[in-house]
Image (cartoon, rainbow, N blue to C red; front, side, top):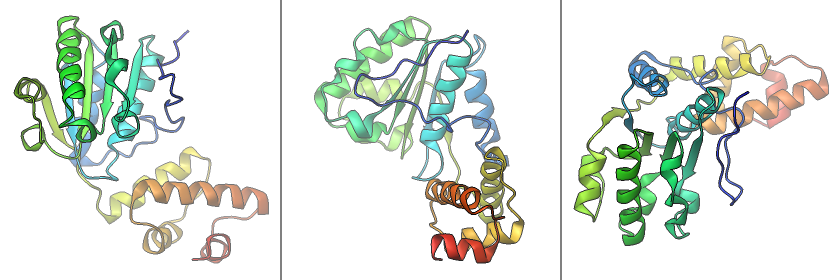
Length: 234
């Protein structure tokens, strides 16, 4: 039986749908996802750094790694630093007891002395213990505004991947994958209409898809362009 991923007492946990199964893997991001999945094995690189613009799926992948670690019977912790960075970094104490630590939105705590020092020491303890670390930020390690030189050095140690944004055809494929996971049939013309009229950011598009799923189930209607216009007012 797998163990539940370690979660913050602050109520921050993992999204149920943030898994590898419903993350569309484009050709340009295939090596990153493969390395992230193999990180859970003893042979994989213990430290990965993922950077990319908002909406590319950084948070999804970090949470997916934690879900996968839990399914493998390992203890994992997802830390969304954008949400918890205003707290003292006490959560980093004894963090080396975990098997995988995923630090999201690193940018949000850089320049804060206590957080930078806490991350530096936590990084060293995790590495010394042979534990897995994955970090995500908007920029590559060499472009981050890190005040503590020793932390900047540590951030550049592992494998770094640029999470590439999807083009329009890949966005359509990603939307269809999300629909399939939800048990929905999404014709190409309907998917293109959603992409054209809906929000640009893929996460927001998936939220619209969830709204449509609920509306179609309630109305017992298939997803068609007229129904989407009615349900979402587009």
